[in-house]
Length: 223
Ligand code: C5P
Image 1 (cartoon, helix red, strand yellow):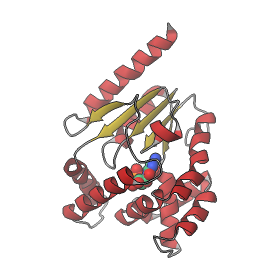
Image 2: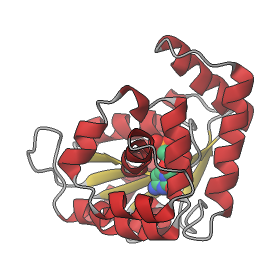
Image 3: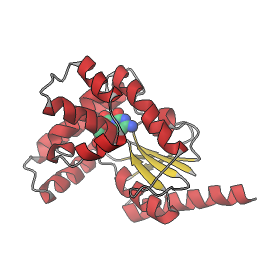
Image 4: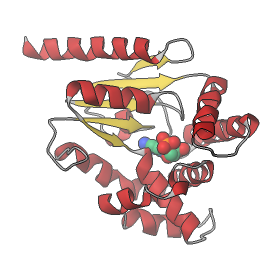
């Protein structure tokens, strides 16, 4: 079984993806990590954000172990790291170089400890449209920019990261703009995706609706 969950930053994709992965025993691929890994290398090596060639080189040389190693760095999930990821993700050459790594995961999905899984949940911006258009069940999770900025702001506060709500909101809006307008694979719901707006639904409600759809899909297969 392959499930894709796309949508803008802080819409609740990760929470839903982890809950579904646990319930259905699926491996989980947070595809934002590949862009964060490239963005972080740009920061660490002091490359200019507009140096697409450097970003492409990091993307071409990215491996799973390197991505996991980079994910331990404090800036991997910081606001600075998120901005760097968003910038490099708009480069068509970077997206092209990172596509196979994301697609290959569905051929041999594994859990964190390396044991094989019988399916995968992708979470990202273009996983239902570009990475895995053949997915069995697709979701697109969204929420207003204010609701999402407040969630991100609270997460940063919990982690002790100093940043104001206004700065987070500005960053969320800038990222949305880049995600929606980039030339290569802009963020949009797949035609066959089910859309949830989490400004009005809490995670329990979204999870319940998502499980209902997955169970119906599984029942149809059994018939
Ligand atoms: O989801 P996350 O915030 O970790 O993603 C980091 C950045 O990577 C996002 O701002 C987005 O621009 C980009 N991204 C993307 N396509 C994906 C996943 C993430 O362009 N499939």
